[in-house]
Length: 362
Image (cartoon, rainbow, N blue to C red; front, side, top):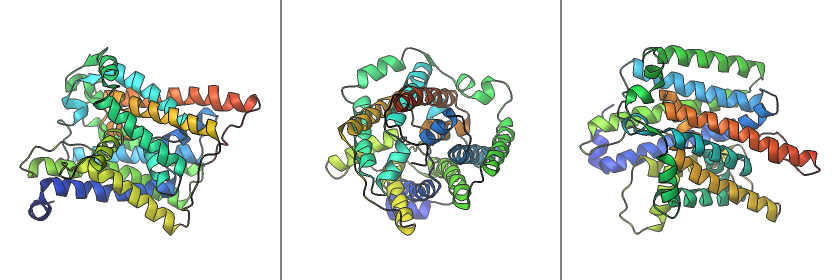
């Protein structure tokens, strides 16, 4: 793909932002129609079922892994310079941050990407939670929470791709990635068929996974065609949410890139999908307790996501698709902490006469 014509019209940064915008629109539409959400999948699994929500997440994750590894196998993608391998990885950050994020997404009833998608459909709870999430993420990068994040992240770090790439660390080598991706996809298809996943579930979930691979491929194309250094990356929402918020709050002239285009793109795509399906409706908080719960969850996700180096999509799917050690540790911590939080807060609250959320699609 020759991007030089785009560079001449929009510049390198503008082209990067447009790519993020278009991929984000596709992600938003697919995620809205499929109800893709890690928190929903974890809650369903923790309550003893592997049905629609788990099937959607598995199809999205497996599609991202298979397609990304296919691009690598075809020499159409090189992730050796991706942040997950090029910088030192924080094991402590992955485990602690992933656990905090997992707890937060249950309290806020949605992971970071899900909050963004829901806010575009008129959900004011998700909109407020998403804004607080972005503020907490920014505070964790440059603000009040940054010293704590740096300290926790520095407790246990490892460096070198041979220690950060699971395919190298465990021995099978990079050529095994495509085979593992195919096995994941086969398993995901089995569970999706068993759960009787509908057409939009199949298409939307596979589309979510495809956008992750598309993000890797597009930024890789940018990295060797652009004159200025460009980072090879893909979908993530913690850092981009904070960057987008600061872009809105700062004077014009702020640098734009893939991440700045991504967040509004997801919002636009989800809004279009919701309007087309006649699912756009305003929703607010039920009571003060509910609002406090969402705010606490958003803060935990913002800090946890920055500590772990990614959100449920950024670490869990994007990082997982290239078999980054820290991403898989983060994803495991998210699943464990989210399941435990659901047990201790929602299910125990319901058993004590509280009002836990029913396990329906969010």
